[in-house]
Image (cartoon, rainbow, N blue to C red; front, side, top):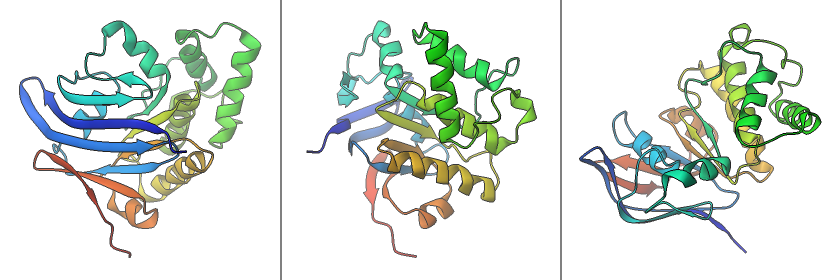
Length: 227
């Protein structure tokens, strides 16, 4: 029995007054690993922002992890984001505190109260991304790849139903990109659904998967040629 985690039907996505993507029809099932590709400025970020409630969906229909995107209320956005894990290109770690404290900050912000449970959850997600021994370090003491692993761990904290990774390898060199990609692949094999926006076509060849492309205000599925 497949479960739909994300569905957009005839959705028009706007950035301010500008129509960025028109008539978008996209569906993701639980357990999928899906790429979103396209040139800079083709609408990938607007697409992602619509999914986590940063941009309003005013035309067409959309649902994500059991939330309706059209008519999504401001007060519901924090609850939606608890069911999503979002990984950004620029890590967004708080520089003035350790990795453990970064992750604890997120747990507290999302309603966790018990210190032992928080400590256990933090150590669990850091282990998952191969960063189990680095919790006491500060972000500046880690390489870019390590910081991105921590960002992925942070995205996993609340056991999200869907992970949105927006150019997660955008700031990383090719070797580190592959290491981060391996982490995402492992997480996906464990049952996490992932939608990843990227312009790194080398990764698509190395890890082929279902792919949507943003181009000329449209989103369409592309069939990858086998390398």
